[in-house]
Length: 439
Image (cartoon, rainbow, N blue to C red; front, side):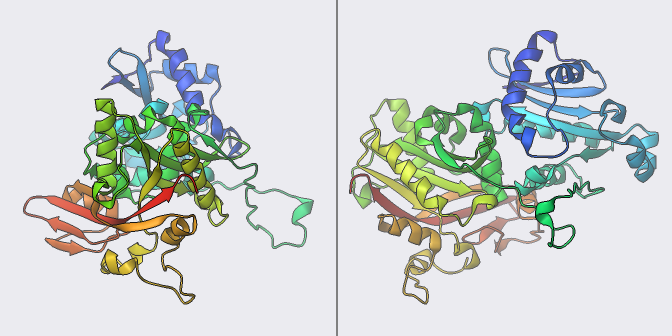
């Protein structure tokens, strides 16, 4: 994979890149009042406009597989008012150093890889070298999916702060709202939800990283994982084992991820947690081993559909996919959802906590057990992430000035920081459960 900077994208690549653009951004067509999706002629015009730098990712066959755009002249962005930013940033305006970060896209099979991050890093490096300020437009739909957090982390890595300079809101006069307080937010209906295998809708893969980003801690998205495997590649090999919760407008609101592997049915043969499951699935696939089990890696739902009972449906869908290959069981290294509120409690004690009704305390663990799963035990050092101290400061949004342990947002256990070695190590336990496929 290589990345080049182009002032004009060669015409022979425009059609292929537009197809990737449509695949990535078509869902936005109905998600915002302001129009965010370019037509083919508009897209071609941007690709030919030298005022807009294109950061292009190429595969080994010299085919474009990713693109990020950075406008170096606001006159090239017709929906932005240059005078507003010029008045706010006169010094940068005088130097021609007010830029605009447009869109970033990567081919669906590279979603979740570092390609997306690398493209935005290139734009940030270019902007920092010019001592520029960079405008970014985020609609409410993408804001709800935590896209600003990704921009903020990339910016911090290159010495930028991240702030809001303006806000555009849209209102309606609607008889149905009569009698309600003026200016009340009108919730966007989420209807027609259905669960589909990724194999049936591969074009929706581009939305999965956004779903994960809406819930996962930043360190799980951007850190160096302990398994050392390209998870996006592993997932892409088995699309039948990935399920998506999709609404009637093809927006993805949930993702259930799993991998087939071999497991003899005993606790002793369980993988070494989340990292171990991914590593085993990858190694056994490369060896040509026939899987006889499936490991569920995660089920993630966006806030828009939380609390609707969809998680149980996603578990059932992953079990059905496992049954499709004749698997004996579906195992899962469960990440208890409330454990982050009790990071100092040992996991083996936490799993035995009960609520006031005598039920298993953690609702996510309880959901698995209510669905028929059997508790197999704690997976120590299940999920590990490492990074530099600076990276951990970006991911956690807080300074880490001295060596030691820190309670961090989203962490089930404390982070260990070694300032002398410039490394932060995080290793959390999970809880192994096994779902029967039949019965």
